[in-house]
Length: 255
Ligand code: NDP
Image 1 (cartoon, rainbow, N blue to C red):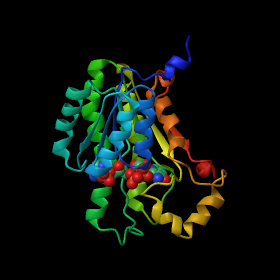
Image 2 (cartoon, rainbow, N blue to C red):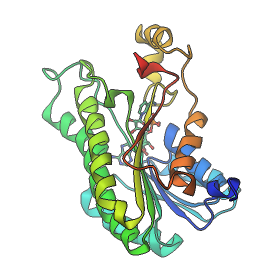
Image 3 (cartoon, rainbow, N blue to C red):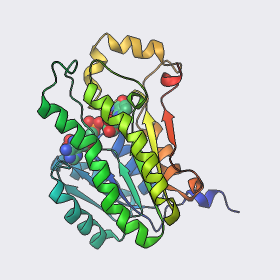
């Protein structure tokens, strides 16, 4: 047995949604540094190009595609483009996310609700379905869904986000059961508080002090601290793990 080789992702093609954002970028770079060819998806062309330039310095083939994941009809053609350019996708990281800081369901508009559910949950279903078809043909694959500590907790501030992230855990388990006979593992990562554009507003809110006090590690996470878990779940080292959710949160969700 060569344990180190288990983590070698050479010969894999990874798709990372939201790969131009804080956590997605760190995961995309981690997968590329471990040997995978990487495609990133996001709406912002400039941010896509910036991360693509970083990926290209690592040396494996990489592409960035500008797409809004809420446009369902664009998903299948995008997968086709990636597979024609890089080869069959064997690693799917459903990471793209948004949040509606509505303050509760009385204030949340149906449009905001729909947008969060479409981005955070429906795109995970649709991409798992479309990429899953390709993985089944390959008889291998890894799907990694990004949940949250709000996969476990309710939230009066961000109810649509918590609803979507709670559902991610159950979708992960259901997909894991269905795909396991085809040697496809489906797992989730539940990040704690990480410094990214999404959480930047929180740094100036009183909530910031509560986060530090409640997190046993006593600090926010840095996005690079998530990449290793994603590489593990994308690698042969995790071939007998499926339907699991790994918390990477400095202990925030222990209590
Ligand atoms: P960022 O805001 O840094 O990144 C979000 C990413 O999602 C961006 O790349 C953005 O690209 C992409 N995105 C959003 N909406 C769409 C869309 N409609 N179509 C395509 N791409 C889209 O946030 P994070 O890195 O923090 O978040 C990444 C994931 O981690 C999310 O699922 C989030 O819920 C989760 N998470 C984050 C935590 C944290 O503390 N940061 C904690 C727990 C979970 P673009 O702007 O180009 O559209």
